[in-house]
Image 1 (cartoon, helix red, strand yellow):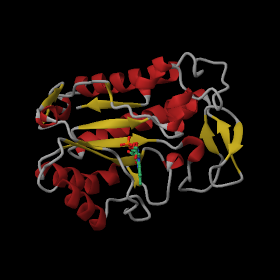
Image 2 (image 1 turned 90 degrees about the vertical axis):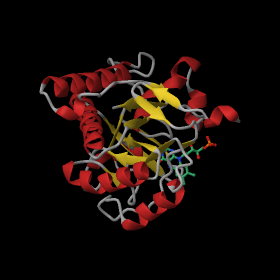
Image 3 (image 1 turned 135 degrees about the horizontal axis):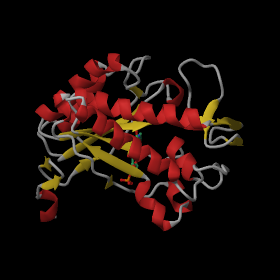
Image 4 (image 1 turned 90 degrees about the horizontal axis):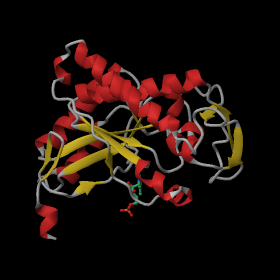
Length: 255
Ligand SMILES: Cc1cc2nc3c(=O)[nH]c(=O)nc-3n(C[C@H](O)[C@H](O)[C@H](O)COP(=O)(O)O)c2cc1C
């Protein structure tokens, strides 16, 4: 137990202790995915007193076609930075570091626009946990590039909003775990679940984004360090993965 109270350094980020609040969607946003006062109150109640070293927020969707639920937080464009800044400030003022969790629901999405099929690794229909079937359209190489870019831009927005890092949500049957799934991913190109080139590409795009931001001289990048940190817990989907892939279920990028 003593160990839990010890500080932990992850790259240039010092966490005051090893207690981490797991991401948990509380469904207190407005219909546009903005941080509401009710949500700020919820995070205040949990973080007041600074008992946690690190808070990982509930998942934010990074593009409109990746929204998992009608009350999910959004970070799809710059207009979302301001309300997220209030959330980051509140948690940090209460004494904890804070990461924004980023995700895309893939075939589990309830898109904002309502038109078009949900996207996934393959053209496939599977039984829905809610009954009936859910179908998805296979992502083209261009779709993969666009969604990857959405993750990268969302990470920069999180930084601008004052977060200490981001965590990539790659569990719970959402888009990235769909790419890992041998049931859902039937691709024959560079993005098969076996090669996991999709994740390699995704991480290298984030790295490129970091480097180009640095070269452009934006000062918020001055202490921007990349770390891949595993914060794995057993998700149901994890059990279907070969052990060597399990540490990719959740990854974090520390600013
Ligand atoms: C209401 C609720 C919402 C959750 N929302 C998220 C989420 O947004 N992102 C995520 O990665 N996990 C989410 N989870 C999963 C939790 O972070 C956690 O992994 C899960 O409850 C298992 O916890 P345990 O490993 O301590 O048993 C949610 C869980 C619950 C109960």
